[in-house]
Length: 388
Image 1 (cartoon, rainbow, N blue to C red):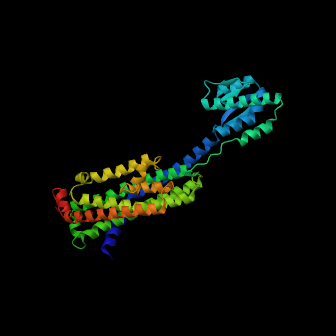
Image 2: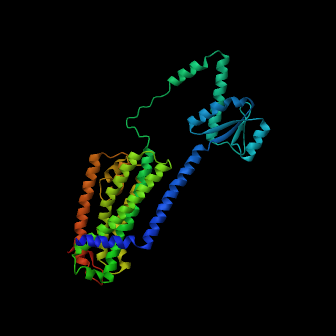
Image 3: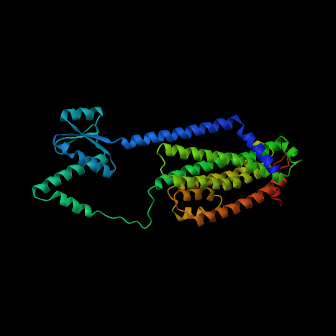
């Protein structure tokens, strides 16, 4: 069998057979499913949680008008007739009603009237009073309503936002976190594994039968497959649960985002993994690895922060440009794809640039790895590692 595949198989089986890996991934899946289910329940409760308003006497005629105005204003109202003012006051005091509108324009509340409800009640009362006066003066209310409706503004956006943009943004945010966690989890394993093999002298036995580059690429491939499988499973479970709970109703956008996420995971993981391997090959003890891999970690964290703060600013020139700059493009371009900001040509160009940067890093890291992996004892300096 190809030596790279042999090393990859060894890394893959070693990782997936550990108890910590199985338990942690099972827990993450449980939390993911439970979180989406709870979010669905809370969301549905919030949607149906209309503000309860009691209507007494002549105010009962405002029931339909009040609910219509509340719906239009984004403040759902559950208006209900109450027998008399005393009962209404008791229900407000007990918290069964948010407010009670008595005959005329008197509003009973427990402590204060929030501005949203005040606006809806005021509009309903004033509209009722206006209609009453117009009827008194012989105005045709239905004709007037038709005329007023015909004068409603017609908005024509030059750059319309899709109705599912909020869900796309949510997918972009979740995808960014998933990509970061996967890369941040598995890429360092490559460097840690190199240090472990150096400190235990296992690497000397391995390199007596295979070449250093075979060992390097076997590690990257094996752990990359584990990470890719993890991302794929999490994405699939998230999409299925989101669909089942009604949290996700844009399957086309979700599938495109998921596929984009997998492609960029391969590029991003390879980019960081080879750098971690190079950093790990320069030291012989676990406690020293941070000194050589800290720059890589800082770049990885910078990519995460750009993604988190860019969720609502993806249309800006800065984020458009940074979506083509490696390695930040591995996080930002999937977000641009999720919200529909990137064309096929732009995505392809970004992939080519990122692939070229990854190839350059792989070439540099391979040289460092070959010159450093068999050197034990003192930490190898960057000058020695680069070969100058």
